[in-house]
Length: 223
Image (tube, rainbow, N blue to C red; front, side, top):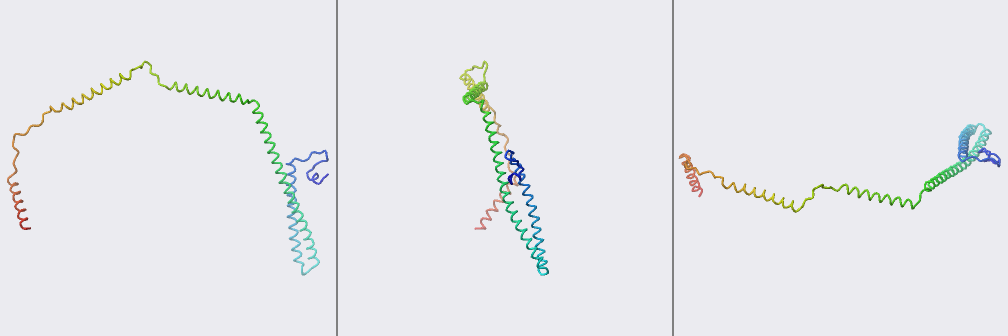
């Protein structure tokens, strides 16, 4: 059995391979496992580095052993980084392939449904149907126009006679107005009073004469 077969739980040659969803889930689980391994190795590297610093001057042998272990952990960490990159790339490619498969499957279903919907449709029948609909709409419009026209039952009058009668009525109204205006000439005017108007009082006349004398005197003084 291959490594991928062991990883995804596949059987022998006759066994059925995992579905894309199962493979994606397995890859995610592997990523989580390797991420935890990374965190563990980083902690070990920090601890070995601290040990080497602590024993650098006191116990050189212990410091060297700590640095050796640190180097091994760093090598494992680099390998895990490369493995995670490969798994991440494979998972993304598998997700894209799964998406494309679902899209194509749905597009195929839509195409079949459309084909089924059009099986009972004949283009000639569709044209005939649309022509019938157009004719019925035109007929309905004609009926609506006919119904909306006003109909006068027993109202067959001569328009010239009606106009002549209207002119007679207007002339009668005009003559009536002229007669009313002419009648006002016979109204008697008020008579002139026979009693003479009262004359101005003597005192008032004398005061006016004095005012005139004063004005003449003022003009003479000004000259």
